[in-house]
Image 1 (cartoon, rainbow, N blue to C red):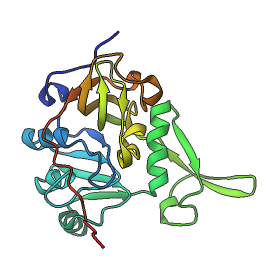
Image 2: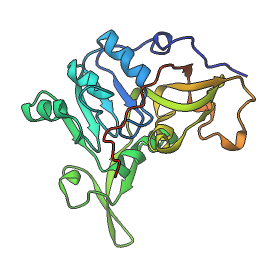
Image 3: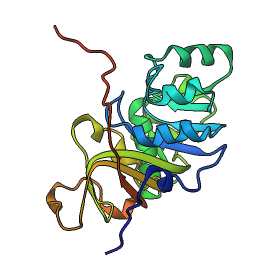
Image 4: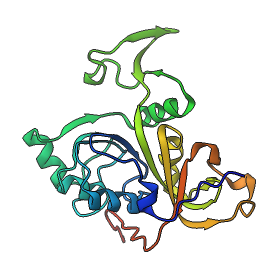
Length: 230
């Protein structure tokens, strides 16, 4: 069995350089690759294009990269929790591509499966479709959307084994699984790393073939964007 384990986040991010395109999993602040983001901030990698459902908050998640002016383009669905994102977008400092949430997921999935593009009805007749090919199928119009092309995908799972098999928990399953294998290199950080054979095969969400590097993170903050108590 091929072992995908690396000893640290530093080793996991080997080959990361300026002006790359990254996929970053998670939904809001749930299931985000906290350790990988912190390492990117530490290395001060610049000129990044980041594909992620959210842009974090001002002082956590991708918001840390935004504060440090490391992101040149953000490809997202929801960005309403980040004041610095708003400021950079309105000032023209940040290039932003807003995508319907389902389309974002399917463009990741297309890259994962090796499909060059998909047709989706989402966005037809709106600004989303401007300049894109459209086609009719059985009386309904669709927009051609190309699969993403990324250098690295950074995902965070609850549990994984040394072969890269992953299990996600709760909302972390939204975007992390479809980003695995959707980039040239997929780096998975996990809360618990176990030997091969300890995971129940019926519980595995992503097989190790989609993962190139895996490491066990520590001291996860697991913040909540907005705490509602009543």
